[in-house]
Length: 294
Image 1 (cartoon, rainbow, N blue to C red):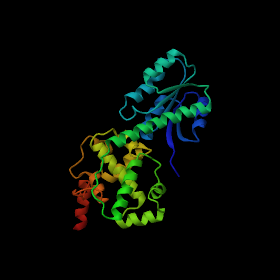
Image 2: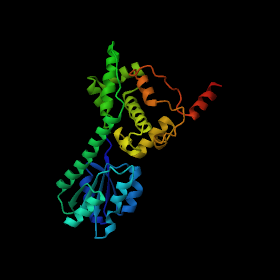
Image 3: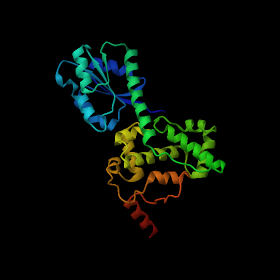
Image 4: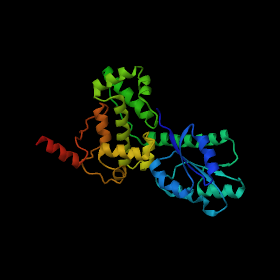
């Protein structure tokens, strides 16, 4: 089952919140809140792809949540769909100044609302695709004398080009390689000791390490570029793989045992030149291995 994209919905009016949540429920996972304060405390962990903010009343502080989003390093690129009761010129001006991407009136049709939400979400995805393709290492391959090496290069290229897709499935990989899922599994395990699912996961995590360690985007951006739907899930998986928090790696505070894991992964897959493969990613792991040997 493909996980749904998360949308944060903020509306102080219960009836309005229920209405827009019902609009979104078929296509998105909706986290709805009655106040901007309650939404803000959850947004960083949720890693949403869209914020729908319904503005009620006339106070100047009704744009505070949008300003907070635009000033935060991990959320500043989050698309914001504003819903206003009356779309007068003054409200439009103040909303755009605060950082809203698109405005609709509260009485808009369901189709118009969903079209606006889908376009804003798609715009963010396109930006992620562009950034990922621009910043990720372009591996250079030499001559490929064997069928197995051609197979590995083809699968590597397909996964890399499709890595920003959070819904990338083993079935997609098998179809691209013109074989069944069981055939793909047997061949990958024979050549590299990895299942297709592990192969995709290793690409995601090691590409994320490379992007973070070279400061090509913040943690939230890299999480999305490499196909993770949830920022909290990305942080958990990344920490398990490299024994370091993503923000620590980005700040270049990693210890000397983190020796180019992206290159190590490429070497392991047979797609890189003469690169020393590090055996440890943390001092803790090194100590544990030493104890086992004793």
